[in-house]
Every structure is written in C-alpha cells, then in structure tokens.
Amino acid sequence: MSLKGKTVIITGASSGIGEACAYAFSAEGANLVLASRNNLLLEEISNRINHSGGNCISVKCDVRLEDDCKNLIEQAISKFHTIDVLVNNAGISMRATFQSLDLEVMKQLMQTNFWGSVYCAKFALPFLLKTKGSIIAVNSWAGFTGLPGRTGYTSSKFALLGFMESLRVENLKTGLHIGTIFPGYTKSNIRKTALNASGISQEESPLDESKLMAPEEVAKQIVLMVKKRRKYQVLTFTGKLMYWVNKLFPDYVDRQVYKVISKEQNSPFK
Image 1 (cartoon, rainbow, N blue to C red):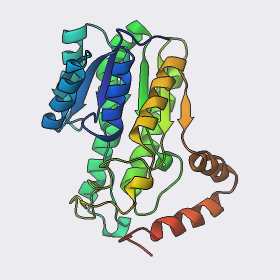
Image 2: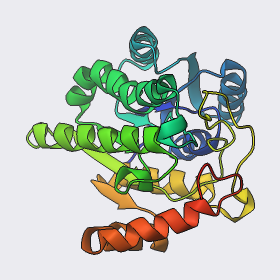
Image 3: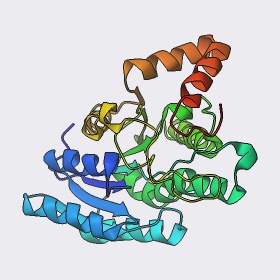
C-alpha cells in the first residue's frame, strides 16, 4: 500500500512518538495534519517538514476538548479534502498510589488518553469510511497488564483497547482498518510530564532514557501497520513475552511487575 498523497492526522505530534511519526509518514509522501497543545513546537516541526519538500499543516488541539477535536478534523478536510489515516497518539501518564491520588488526576488521564481518541475517531469516522482508511491507537504494555502506581494510566489504556476492539468488529465489513500498537518504554517526555498524586508534572524521568526504545523505531512500525493493515503490534521481546506470560501465569507477572516498578527512582510504593 502506497501512502503517497494520503492524508494522515497525528495527535500528540509535538514530541516523542508523534513527532517521529510525522517525519516517517512525510518520508512516505503523505500529507500531514499535526495536532498538539504545544503550538510552538508543532509549528517548528511543520515548517521543517514543509521546507524539506513535505506537505504539512499544524493545528493547535487539546484532545481533552471535544470542540478542539472537531476543529482538527474540519481543518484536515478543509486543507486536504480527505482523511486516510488517524494516529491517536496523544497521551499523558501518572505516578502515584491510588490511595494518595486526587481523583481529578484520574479524570485527566481518562480525558486525554481515552476520550481524546474517542473524540477524534468519532469526527474522522465518516471520512475514513469513504477512503477505507485506518485508525491507529498508540497503546502500551499498560493496556494488557495492570501497572502499580499508574492506576489512571492503566485504566485509560485498557479502556482505549476495549474501544478499538469494539470499533474493529463493528467495521469488519466496511473496509476500515483498526490497529493497536503496544510500544515498550520509549524515549519521550511522557515520564517527565507524568502527573503526581496532586496533578503536578514530576519533571524528571525515573528511568534512564538513553536505554529506552527510540521513537523512530515505533514510528517505523506504525507506518508498517498502516501499509500492511495489521491489527496488533506488540513491540520488543520483553513486551511479547509479557503479553503471553500474562495470559498463562498472571500471578507471576503481578509479582514481577511489582518488583520492577517498586525499584524505580522515587517509586510511590515499595
């Protein structure tokens, strides 16, 4: 499947996986609509792509807001007239025990990670059905196993997977492609911007970011998912192992996940 001339919308495109996806899809000749709350960074990326011969627009969008998501889709149609791919990548994380967590933090996680994807999919769906296009959700290992200290994040990713599964089955006969990718820990700002129990960004990563997966590798796999119309992609050997072991030996996985995360720098539990 060629992506040349196809219109691709990417949320959370101002950094990390979203930014890498912008460059990867542009290299395939796609028209890009980039969305993020950080309009300054978004415009820099858009200008860089356009100056290198790409075709890209940026739209300031807070996916927590339904009207912003509606405007994003309207801007895409106004500029390129069709939509072929929607990459729901925008997301935030958190680190705190549920006992100490302000419930407003939980709501923010659900509003961004779950509802942001729902809003964008809802408004893009009529156009994607016309092109028999693709909706890709960037999920996480937290989408298939519970992570302690990240109840809000895990809940939002489980909900996102359920939404995508239902949407996929609903569209078995429409030609719409629904895909979910499960990256491992990836170099990005998501841990630095992760919310603490009070909803304040922690501003530092508990992990050694230099040892994590490059966002460019995740972007490469997302492009392949679209071109080959794959339903699922679990990245890294550890991720694949966790996925299957979790199905067969869930108690063992619980203990191992607890052990690993409790050893993180400034872990919210021991």
